[in-house]
Amino acid sequence: MEQIQSKISSDLTIRIAIANGSFSNPVNVAIDEHDEPYYGMDNRYLINAPFHKFRGTDKAYRFATVDSVKNGERFTLSVMKKDPLDGIDNAMEVDLLLKHAMSLGIAINIVLMDRGYLDVGVMKTVELLNLKYIILAKDNLKVLRFKEMEMKYSTTGFSYLILNDIISSGSESIETKFVHVIYYPHRKKHDFSFYTNADVTEQNVKRLAETYRERWGIENGYLEKKEVKARTHSPDMGVRYFLFFFSVLIYNIWILLNLLRRIAGYKWITLMDFIIAMSRGRWLSIISDHG
Image (tube, rainbow, N blue to C red; front, side, top):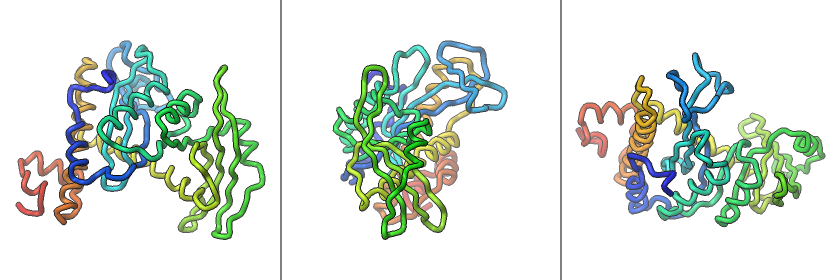
């Protein structure tokens, strides 16, 4: 757990949320990595990230988080820094993040991950924790062949394919299910291919696809943290790590206050209004509709 500890801990916000009735049921969570561009001199903590196409740099420092994707309660449950020499692969990262979230008393339903986490180690790690996963499929030759196969048609208006498959990596392998589903909510085509260890049937396949779409909540969370993160020109990586962890804390306080406002019958306060109220010391207006 030491890898996850930060100079600013947001665990207290989660415990307060739990004490006020949040997380009473198992929740879906998303795991992802977030890269912050770096414009200073190169150092061992940076990663090469030309794929991001940051303006003026190919260097970044990286964090990994696990977030609840439940609307209105999108807390960041665990956060850790990553660097090229930390010796933590995807499977260990997932293990550390999920165990920390679960140690807070949170029951997890399904873990949502993008295709970067599609490997045997990650899948086995999630299964050893007795959890379900949905991981976006990579369009390799096998998956492209699967997607060309004839799909079944549901009388409720969508097409689907469910196949038993084996994912291999070196000498390791794991049995999983490949799922391809096409449906048209609001006349817009949604075409998803993913792997999962959940039970999949015609009755729940579309719901599982919609569950994966909840993963975008973690992306929105990163954008909101960017709004509250202080800018710095310091070359000290400790300062930069601190500012990201601090942005997680402020973000979680905002989500927590909106949870408490909802319990009290008050309307949602936007992130910008929250920041303005804090900067002006108007705490009463943050926790209620007074002031």
